[in-house]
Length: 214
Image (cartoon, rainbow, N blue to C red; front, side, top):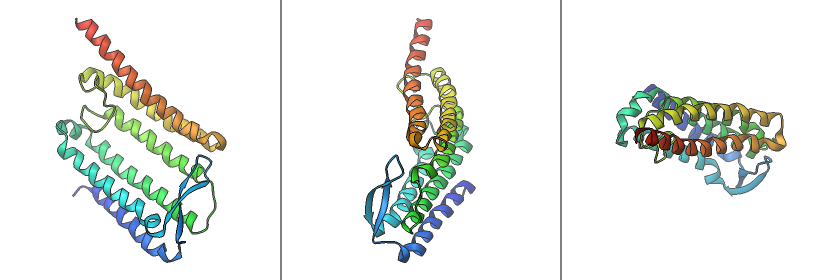
């Protein structure tokens, strides 16, 4: 079994073990969602408050592990497999970190939840940029538009640009640490821009290539 998969399995088991350990100390009604100001705005029962995130992490891991086996272009995934496997590990660590914050809050620690999420989201966005830059054409991972899926050249150009934009989004997200009031704008704004712009860019590049060839 891959070392990356063993690492993720360890993270999943650790999250379940931590949940079981802290379960008796946690309240019957647990905080489970925070607004953009880092304030609680959602609750759930104790069992699901403790174990929902570990179950989600388990499900996401199984899905991501299956993708390289079922993608019709799975040979292309193998070309950037180390980046994809790295993403699985990083995403699992991100989930474990959020889970740790959730448990800490419900144990009575008070802090701005959004503020503490910023560094982890910044790292995740930046690594997504690294993976996107190296991604080869496939049906599950990357910027999949009708135009990137129709042209290898459009795919490569779009992903080179998209990788840079997502890495920039990760760096910009860190500004939320200095401007807490606008933290969500610094986190989500650049990512939404990157998604919209790369979608438009892929279309324009496809049109340009078609015009040149016709």
